[in-house]
Length: 217
Image 1 (cartoon, rainbow, N blue to C red):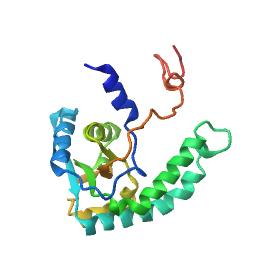
Image 2: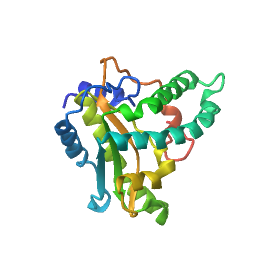
Image 3: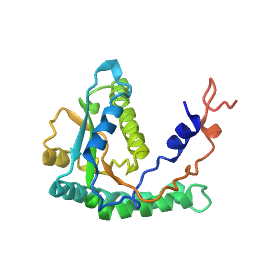
Image 4: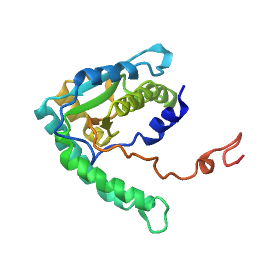
């Protein structure tokens, strides 16, 4: 296995917002291939209860974007006052760029040629933490695999969840049954440029615990 290529893919797959090419049609056959790859991800008890709802209809994308904007308007004030944007926090500069990028996506979400909503059978609020972890653990790895597969083929995506504030309205719009949990909304489009880089992150060693919480190696 070519570790350099694998590591490059893993460390440069970003949430793409401003560099989505909204005018270039997405090859749906390529998207279908990526979904097939994504469904090779782990799944709890081999349930395979995952679903990918692909939205290409312009009116439905516009309606989803409207729900997303309503949620973003609520979220933005909280984001701008979060600890990671305060003076002196090492995450400040990057976080402010992310907020600006998210605001851009909010204004242009309806233009993304494809929206993908990953779903899982069942309702996470209906069980204890172990049940919730198992459900999310059976869909979120597949979503990340989808993003990686897209990235490898020149397609960008962004993991967003704000529309879930209006989950019921989105479900009604898209005919999603009551026993299905939506987990994200991914705008998908070809991206521009090739200069994606690893993100600035806090040192992993500061969040890695050995045998006991707070113990470092």
